[in-house]
Amino acid sequence: AAHKCSILSAIAYGIPIPFHKAYVEGITQLQSQDMKFATQLGYKIKLLGITKHTQNGIEVRVHPCLISDRSILAKVDGAMNAVMVNADALGTSLYYGKGAGGDPTASAVIADLIDISRLGHAKSEQRVPDLGFQSDSIETSAIVSINDVVTCNYLRIGVADQSGVLASITSILADHGISVD
Image (cartoon, rainbow, N blue to C red; front, top):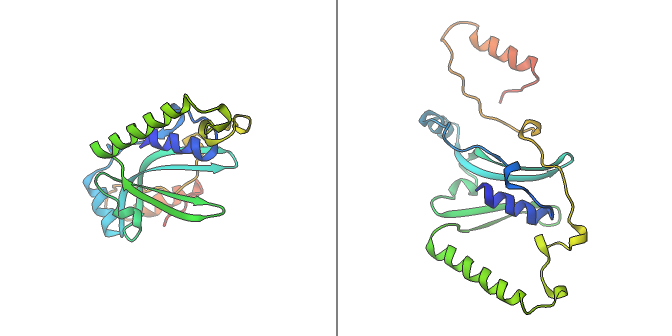
């Protein structure tokens, strides 16, 4: 997912995206109770690749996310993949299909080999440029550190069943400008 996200980011924004700069968090920290709580709250937990062009640069991150169980992304399972794109002119669109397995991979490899063989016979002005952008328009842009990404987070806290404990936690969160939904 992180490799796919890096490649799609590079193509979308026309800049090289070094894979090692993508933030990657797997599902190893999730526990079964997180899945149960998500279901109770009307969500599913999905591993998402997210890329975003912001004022500070490009965000490239892959991590577990809470998705409303009514969202079409929540229904993507198994070997199926989906890419949701939000573009200025188009709005939001979704691309869905097989993302793994022998047939899809073989098809992609054959298509790549055909493209490569055609490159040898094509004049440079007829070739699709790197990243789909003309080389003089390819920019370098900062890759935003996960420490600088502002987003929603899921927080599960185990506490003693004592009076005032939740009030103390909410006070600490409020002192740091963290709102709770």
